[in-house]
Amino acid sequence: METTSQETFTTPFIFKTDWKTAFEDDEFSKIFSSDILENYIINKRWYGGKASTLKYIEIVDHFKITSGKNNYYGVLIEVNFKEAFYQHYFMPLAFMAEEELDTNTIIAPVQFGKQKGFLVDALHQEDFRKLLFDNIVRAKESPAFKLVFHKGVKFEDKEYRSSKFMGLEQSNTSIIYNDSFVLKIFRRIYVSTNPDYEISRFLTERMNFESSPAYTGSINLHLPEGSITLGLMQELVPNQGDAWKFMLEEIDGVFNNLKTKKIKIDKLPDIPLFKRLKINEIPPEIIDWVGLSLFLKLQTLAKRTAEMHIALGSDIHDTAFTPTTYNGDYTVWLKNRMLYQFQNRLNIIENSLHKLDGLALELAHQFMENKKLVRKHFVDFDWTKMKSERIRIHGDYHLGQVLVNGDDFYILDFEGEPESTIRDRKVKQPPLKDVAGLFRSFHYAIYATIFNNKDKYPFEQEQLFKAAEILFNYFVGAFLQTYVEKAQEGNLNIGYDHEIEFLLKYCLIEKAVYELGYELNSRPRWAVIPLRGIQSIMKY
Image (tube, rainbow, N blue to C red; front, side, top):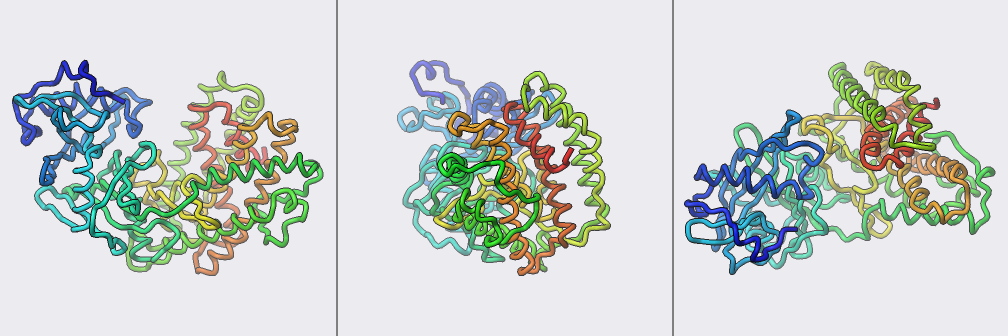
């Protein structure tokens, strides 16, 4: 974090223009986008270009928004990279005189005419946060600046009382209002409405879906080339943290039971992956080991997931949400995407073999030996055999996107897969792709528990991995039984048993290949998890 020491302030950037007309001044725009922004942006958590080399930054658009006291700017910037691609970001900007400064997160010391002060991110000023809230309450449109504030039907608050930042700054910045609402400001922006805004508003206002935070408002910028979503406001739901944290605690208890209940891993009954089981069909030895309550929670999560998909797939009026069948266009899109990603992962593995050892290295070699088999799996997608339907889906569904509320769950963050283009995120896909994402998350939670507590459980790693695969198969079996039942009850066409299994297998491998790139780049030791996932499904 930058600080506001005197030392920083001794060398302000000096401009002849004043703040009110700053962005009409070429000299200010030029220095702001180069000398000022380039230094500031690379240290921000929401900046997604850290792995690339910044070439230059350009201001592509700006608008002014004024409260009774201050002028603020919303600035849209384009960051160009030496690797020949670019990203767009949104920056709300404020100028504060030295005596008004009440934050230690500054962008740069500046001087406009005789007025000395600081450029700061406007979200750090309460006056600006209040201005956004008041404009949503009034559902204000500002045609001059193409800025549209929308007030959701579920939003009943009229009065601004308080605002504060929510947790650490991530890829977006979230502000809590009146201890009741969360306004997510999107930092990385796209010339298209954000799927998180589209889906959140649709689920609340069209479908009355209650297992995700209710949509209460938004901020969009309407430009000739398309709409840009700058902010999404939802209700703040009571919760005890996310399902990832919950799962890690539960699974730690399950592995502790191996020792305390003197369970013999080799004697545990196993089932094939995707075999569906009602709770009363789970063998008593497994219930004794895992506990009934975890299976009941998985059932609830399966119900909520199916209800989300039923809501996303049951609209017959809004073409963005009407279900559709499989066709040749989708297959071409899917295969191109898969083969590109697969080749990318192969290159990463070849460049990362030196970072691997032990089981990870062994599995990586097996993967390389079987690459033709995995590649063939992606090419073998035959849409003519598909009888189910494609719908808009969550797109990045895992335990971290689910909040635990007592015995129930809320589903959040419909932005989609971070690596995908905004257009690809809106492509209708099999709902089972979300289910597969959650299953990969179960697999991760199980193995992460083993990796994070390796000295705690008195068993050989190979034994723990064996228990891990048995546990995973039962998690999948219990979840799938409830999900399929609920989906079919709600007339969601997910296909017959053979098709369900094919799609799940396809999506699980797709997801594991996607994860492989991430792990090899950031935590090579964990590459075991996706590699083992691919191996167990492909059975090589």
